[in-house]
Image 1 (tube, rainbow, N blue to C red):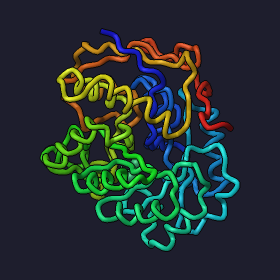
Image 2 (cartoon, helix red, strand yellow):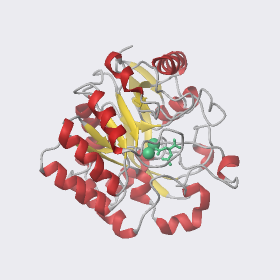
Image 3 (tube, rainbow, N blue to C red):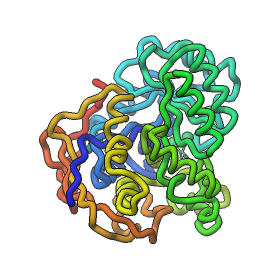
Length: 354
Ligand code: NCD
Ligand code: ZN
Ligand code: ZN
């Protein structure tokens, strides 16, 4: 059976490039995104030079305009240098990202009064995406309650966080929830087996947390599946101080299709999680000729040989999955035929304008 998905979006991707081009590039990761079935990917601001000033933002957008193969968006980043003065004139971005707990990069903001300034100054009706774990979720919810700004909670990974956010949704706060395939398909037991290759933030959790995530994905509490694609080289991963992050652009769709095949997820919900909810939350609409055809029954084993992302490894290697991307079309142009990416660098456009 062939499933047609209209405009797959991954709203949480770290493509690297610029000063971290040794990890991956806009060209390599947008090609990987296309092979993974995606129309558009939204890039996070924590790659140096961080997207926390107009200059750095313009540099990134120019590089993306030249090099991206699929469509794209970029987040502006909240910085410790109190950069909220820049927010008034921001356009052409998918949102603001605030890092509230430690992870890869240098954008951590721990003081609640500083977080509040970022919330106060960010324009109404534009998404704020937050990295917030555990009790920090409650601290951010206080700001959402006060400023009513649309807030996307990235990579939610525990039963407790889900309880906080369920209550907040019932209260009517303007929030959305993203969950990653690694928190759905791996647990702390796999972390023991995988070592640094399973080192990411938030960390892998217990089976009970994993169960709670699946329940929340099935019930519709979770809005989007986001890969949090965060490539690092194997050398870096096997170094004494390995960085946090795992790749995921090419494995998200098969892992989710496998859940459908195995009866853990409905096809209808899959469509919401990978396409419709992101369109609604980020107020974007794919062209009518932007779609992905997935052969649902196609079985395979995840193997680094088959991945085109630059880092050349996956924490899901060896897993048996279903689902093969047969065709991807963007704005009336076929960009993938099941084997090859068919467009050149520069084909991809900013979904949010300039
Ligand atoms: C991300 C990265 O490497 O940029 N790492 C990660 O473990 N997820 C940063 C982030 O999303 O927290
Ligand atoms: Zn994060
Ligand atoms: Zn991330």
